Image (cartoon, one colour):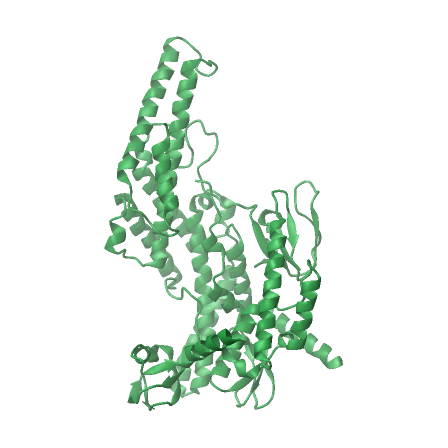
Length: 156
Length: 210
Length: 220
């Protein structure tokens, strides 16, 4: 009857990870006028046409779906930046380059809902997939070093 | 061999898919209980024999002592297996309250020991009383919420439709933004399509082309 | 170049403001609870505040319905409400499931019981009673005298040796919120790690549980 840790309790489901990523702040450019939103999760707006505003990703996607804004691609999601990151990730086997913690989920949500706002979408997407593969490999290698005596592994 | 039947019970639990339940194995379970009592009878008689010979049962290390120890340890092992069997099953059974609801379907009911049925009922009652004390229903919202509205394209002329407090005209090829719950009947009849799914589908197709 | 810096500091300020909302605090509690092997302290005032905000927004949405506020605005507030409700329910549910898992272990420790809300304490108590009754009538009552305890294998056990408990030396992923500095991970001071702000680590839960309780580190 020894207690084992329960994986069902301790692991976030993909939809829960997405839920968390939806709170990341992104920039939108509205095409409408709308009063400030005083929400439980924070205060956003007021919104004016063509004037950029910062909102959580879920709100950005909701407005985008209703045709009320465009979403500005985050700085890190450009071909230039991602190419730099990928090169650096490949060169240093231990280091990780700075990217948002939820870069996979954020980019997935943007690809699903605001694809027309992303320049070079195909290239951006394949760069993110490459970075993910390189990183997974690094994390796997890092975790393999854990032994009975290990106390800590640093990941970044 | 001592303990083999008991481990068979655990193998049953182990070979079962996570979160699933096999029928309560009362045959093997009862046999293991009988084994336990036989071990105890043997154990007691060996101890009695040592006492009758005026041997100190704390310090004596003769054949009877080791025999008694084997019966004692076998009984412990059987007990641990029985308890693990019941406890692991109870954990699966209580998870049913969250996954299935307060009433279990017949095909699950018939896999349960009578005490397990009672446990499920009592456990459900404890959750219910927590929820009423807290005045919150925890059996809904099991997964993160989605946008309650979706964009749809009308595939067939449907005409005027009343949705809650207003009505709209669903003409072929028009685009609308509707409550997800209002659209379900039309989507299931292929009269309208969810644009998000359409876009994802198109993306998946184009991705295969690269 | 200066516009970049402005942008960064504005983003940092926005992040700091966002981190202080109650929903953000609840989300942190939810994530820590999810990743921690043992049950953490229940923050009653925080949960009450979130519930008040939920109620307020529900009332506001009712008013919106009557005063004919734009559907767009209503749908956005509805999403905010749905997200908060999910978070609250998921958090409370997660705690109940953890209590279910370690009911006996929790019920016999004053320290662990004090981490639960009153309602959770009652839940833990009745869960334990029912589990004990179930094991009693299905197994223990059929076993010989001396072997019929629910918490001990037999009379020869000198302490409870049949109570499932969480494994505190399991590895967890965690993120430091601020510089902690040199931190000792074991009892004898042989393993020291420099915990720098915003870094990710894989550590044994046991060694950093104090930092989780004091809010210096987040589990992810």
